[in-house]
Length: 330
Image 1 (cartoon, rainbow, N blue to C red):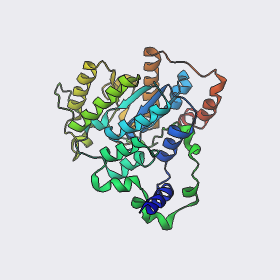
Image 2: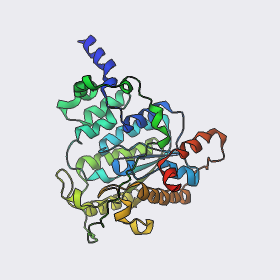
Image 3: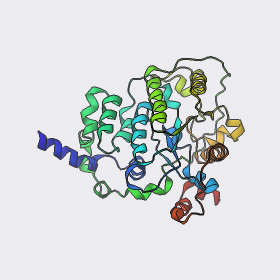
């Protein structure tokens, strides 16, 4: 049995899908020697919403986007603990959208984006135990049990994936579609609803971690049409009321909270042209949000401008290959 599990452990990395999520987490968490002033954590809203290359170009701020699609707050907590092993005392920017999830566990395929790409450790074991249902835990420990069907479709990259090939993105990727529709109009409300129990538990864990590990924490909520999640099973039925509660909770804990949904007009977000779909910014929207947030950081935090430091010369080269550099040339 020990021999069998050893074999499963050795071959599992071959079967895990070689995606942008894998590349950025492996490189950004474990392989790159870069240090980051700011780290972005959360779901696909953050993954396609905050572009570290914009912060670099405009302010010389080093940052990395560790967000992955469908990443619940409990998974974020354990992923952040791995981030802090390599990057002590960064500013941690936490996407709060998934506080609205009422299911006990996130979607299996999406949770895999993060957990499958974490290095084996006691922290990963804790993540598997606390973030996945009991019947799935063995397959998170040995992913080959999830992906064995890929045996006949394995490619050369599965045996030697170049994680550094996506590092120039610094973890960010956004779509280039334009939604073409105005946002569904929701009346402003002063209502509050409670943060779901497990979400609140892990938000508190992250707040406590910020104290014990001595990092600054910022909460953000990205622009999104609430009509979809408000009607989604496993989600709160009033996102605006939830984020009103989050604002109260952040204030009571003396944590900055930027609700970029409410600030969309100040940012200049045109929902029809700056959203990739109803829930996610596109590249142009992300540029506006990243510019707004970079200015916020520059005005409120003492961050070093690294652009003239030769030790960071590669950041200038990476920027030239970024999505944002491409659109600004046009």
